[in-house]
Amino acid sequence: MNDQTNAIHFGYEKDTQGTMAVPIYMSTAYEFRDSLHASNLFSLQELGNIYTRLMNPTTSIFEKRFAEIEGGISAIATASGMSAIFSTIVNLCESGDNILVANAVYGGTSTLTSHTIKRLGIETRNFDVTDATSLEELIDGKTKAILFESLSNPSLAVADFEGIVAFANKHNILTIVDNTVATPYLCKPIRLGCDVVVHSTSKYTGGQGLALGGIIVEGESCEGKIKNNLRYNHFNEPDESYHGLVYADLPFPSFTMRLLLCVLRDLGAAPSPFNSWLLIQGLETLALRIKEHSKNAMKIAEFLESHSKVKKVNYPLLKSDKNYGRASKYLTGGASGLLSFEVEDYTTALKIADSTDIFKVVVNIGDSKSLIVHPASTTHSQMSKEELLKAGISDSLVRLSVGIEDADDLIADLAKAIG
Ligand SMILES: *Cc1c(COP(=O)(O)O)cnc(C)c1O
Image (cartoon, rainbow, N blue to C red; front, side, top):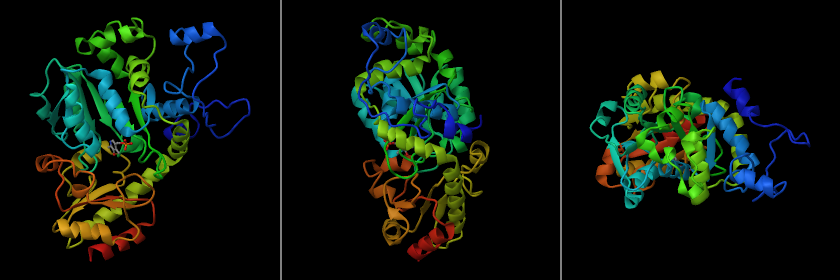
């Protein structure tokens, strides 16, 4: 089936009531048929529901559907995008290891990788996401993953997929792609040769700013990179914490199984079934919305580019944008709803953000409502001057998350605010 059919139907077999809408299974735990059934589930002789920290029928439908649309083989939903990223790192790294992280990433990912995991002994080495040649001098035997965003928030850099994938395959190392901004409708990293895709489903997937969520999708290529690879010894050796289980020997996707049986079990970043249900509703219309977000953003980018008080517009599908070449290659259906622009100075940027009516000052993206923010004083205020520069964020940058209101109304709103 094609994506849009899968987004409506995949992974849901109607229950005995014939319920058309996916039910919300609001339950912490599940009754076993008997003690043998219970012990079979714990020893993986059978797969089934045990406890909602590990699995839930509503969440499972969301996971199956999302994996299918991303072109993956399995997925694990988490409580938020940040917990998806943290859990993925924990699934691969221990103290003494390092990961290669793109210079242009979401603010939370930047602080997580540069500071929080550093305290756990995991080192981050930054590379230029638009030029994979910068990777070669960073890798060593302790490197466990390459983490980057397909289309970065908020600097809108488009990744050098071909270069990064070639490098990762040469060194037999896993790539983790945060595909939050592009969504699987504009970009499918697994089809481009990447191994793991993560999302903040709080953004475009939900689409109306209703629920936090994250997801981790395993691509088919993970298996081959993990099995018998010294880099991923902990998948190939018995796990003491799970009576000697060897994840790479299981007849199930090993990256997902370790994530579930070990990381989710111990970290507990499980989503609420209610949030999974909201995200299932969002997924049904994601394809339709992302087209409108992209169309509106393109119109606004062109308007801003022609405005005398705007110094620079960052939108990857503008011919003037430095990402245009990669954007036209990797972002086939549009460039999403995120754009940023630079004005005269800090004060002007703040004044614009405070002068719009339709665009609300909100630190979120992917909502059907249009949002505006000044990153240097908000989302990225915890970063140092050098870190900001590295991430391509200047003092006078304004970020827009263009919604799906009428484009002419949005342009009039910005025209008035810019003056
Ligand atoms: C928002 C966001 C995150 C974090 O997701 P939460 O759901 O807010 O925890 C991670 N990556 C990107 C690209 C984001 O935009």
